[in-house]
Image 1 (tube, helix red, strand yellow):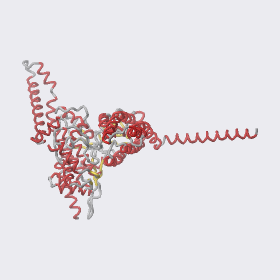
Image 2 (tube, helix red, strand yellow; image 1 turned 60 degrees about the horizontal axis):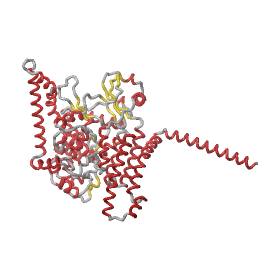
Image 3 (tube, helix red, strand yellow; image 1 turned 135 degrees about the vertical axis):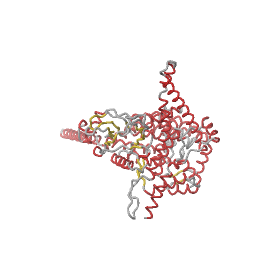
Image 4 (cartoon, one colour; image 1 turned 90 degrees about the vertical axis):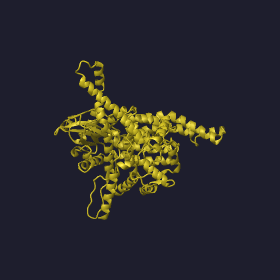
Length: 622
């Protein structure tokens, strides 16, 4: 009896102890789950719970350690060649089955995964076509904006330390732009009446972005394990990935970058004022770790202007201007069906089989230069626009006469925009040239440094590493719409700060390409930058440099030329500073190519490169 009672008491205490321990553990878990680390861990769990079945699918069906694969190999005796072909076909089916699942995971989780999909759709990594096709659709997928009352308003009032109606006369609740880590709202300041843009970072970005980056890194390792991507190429691409996206979280740094570039734009010797380029001004007192307030620049994005010009050329713009820009540039860099070994460079992988259009372009290109072809297209389009505009003006002038048929008047009314289009056609080319000039100035010889007696350049240089059409505005004079617009540059979240020696090395490489130096000279400057290739081929490095910063040539359409170049050598290490500079050149040249202009980045940046080398020599001699 005693023993039974003792047993019951022990059992009761044990249950109570377990219950208390469990309750304490549950409470601690609840507290942890609401910390940034806990929320990040929950997001990682959400990712892996969705991805794990896909990983299992690949392992079970194609990995050599899988029991199914071992059993199949023992049961079915076939030649090694047949085994390879069978595996290739099976992997293709796995890609087709799992690509839509991965795509759905990206849509469900949103945030950085949307941006990752956009990057993967145009990356140099050998992404399977089945995945790339799904990822391309994310180029036009705008991240859903967060609720203003529930998320944005509380964040702004907490960060700015006052109710919104005490700070702003008005603020648009519908964002004028949204991204993976935040969104922007147009507002009017209460005191001055100035129109501003208020950029707000989501509170969740602080824990979601690091968690997502960790998941992406682990997932990329699995992709290498399952032969979905190449190991060396994946390492090269992933090295810059965490730095790039974590840098976007640093609003203080972005604010400082914007202030530096704005101050530089006030220099009358810089190309900003000379060529009508404006940078938004920062309101320091209204900036925090989660908020940046800057002047509002009126006008549409250059993306819209480019779409209109592309439509005039008969180019399909349904895929979005960013895709068109990258595809246009890709046609100038690679046609062999495999991604070029360009380190961190972003470029589309072309189709395996050259199209009849590519073949025709190659034949014509052998007879007529690319510049001549583009000139013919632009001239024909300009003649058509101006002839239409002249006819419209003539009909409008004569419309008061009763002899002018009503259907003529209707025709002229429908084509009224032809006059403005004809006037804006020439401005578009000037705008592209200006963009190249300004970015060359920012990269190579922006005056953001101090020089004192017997010292060196001490400050770094800010490079806008994200000049895609969505970050470029066509700033119109609202009081005078007929006046030629200016160009507005926004978003300095992704930047590269170049050390003085880095600038000089890049300048020498640019100048050697602009001056059409020998293979030995160009390759030497490339090696000075630290690039490493498998065989250290001088010819490969020289051709690679010309491909990066020269103008597009007819031979770049030749499938055999690219094939031979890739056989010659391959890149093992690509310096990050050059990668970011090339990304800038890539996007700007791609934009130009899509609008039927064929600039040589080297020639456009020649005078900036010369000035940088000259300044460095002066400093060294003092």
